[in-house]
View (cartoon, one colour):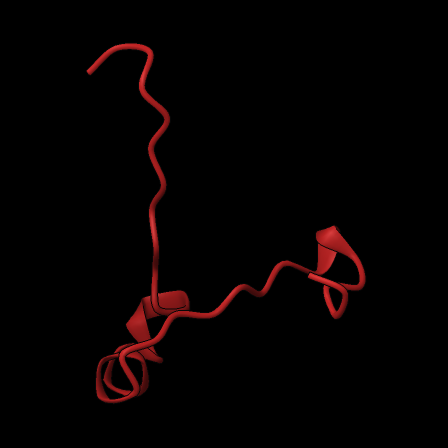
Length: 40
């Protein structure tokens, strides 16, 4: 798989949001270093 981009999705530190993500069939982006994400 060399050269292929990969993404890792985690459910918060220690998996604290895993139940919420599973029940809502969703994931979230939360990186303060990215700045304002409301336009995305």
